[in-house]
Image 1 (cartoon, rainbow, N blue to C red):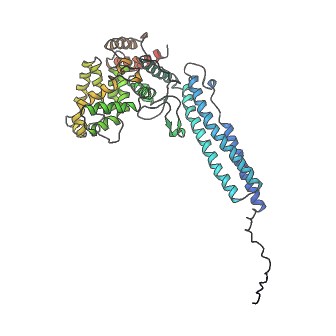
Image 2: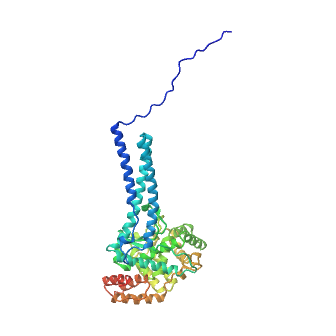
Image 3: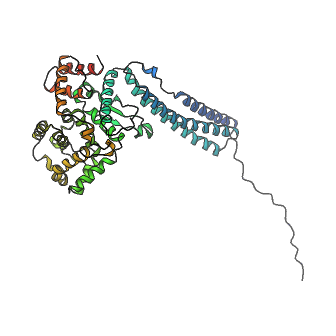
Length: 444
């Protein structure tokens, strides 16, 4: 058999992918300038963020409290650490890109630049938010905000001193600030805020529009907003709707109506504890808020967290009756129902309207007259109390406010009630009542 010989062909040289072209010398210089400037900018941004010092806001009584400043500085340190880490990675990527420029390395650098910028923007946003709050303590609102802080603190004291068992005292204390807008609001301790890049707010914040500060008899908003924070700090945020659900279900309330009352739990709780903190004056102050045009007052929202305005006062007068103020409760109900045509309630969902008398009774019972471990085994009405004899104290304090005298050892929260009583009985011009209200809270 013949042998087949296969001759070897010429050697084949492996084909390599072409190297990316190096930028021309002028472009390379611009790339280096760009990289270096971005690193320099980022590092300077990082060094610009500083903690707050007590001295920069003064050392007088209106200055922010040191625990509040320390809590904010801790939050700033947390986000500054994230910012510093991002800047460090950007600097390393910049060195690599300068050593051997390529599209992949420049792409990595650009992505890290975005990250570093986002961290810088977050840090600046948080710093500026709290700086503006603290800076208000050096301007025209400083004394009024100090007065509100003292009322807010007294609301906390009234609750925590009345618990049936000791529990850790929340700190730092609440802090108030002014912001334009119709209504007051609060940011709870530990709640993650979008304006803080979803970081947790370290202490309760009470936001008030200036027109509430001008009219102190309308400051029932303060115990209400503090009520939200007390519900949060007492770990009742998730327990309250369950209490309502169980009580209303046992009473045979339709499921549709039960869901509505559960959705309203936060605002109902804040209203009810407001009544317990300052008494009937809370309902008077609430009228300022919910007194709306007939075509709006019964407007129902299937997703709203606030009780429909028409029924909101009636929830609170239920509590007033049960703590010894039946006469005032009846007067409030008659006045409120007398404002609106009798057909207004027909705009409410039938399940809510028809079951309202039983549901309001059971909801108030669930939140105020049911013992709970959060209160050390007590009921809320045993923890925070406004008694008929306290109304006598409020009346005397109102007379002294009108006369320009010092009301004496009156709890700070009662001064809202006293200002309301003084206004309603016209014991003095509104300007004098407002001035004396703040003078007393400021210790003048």
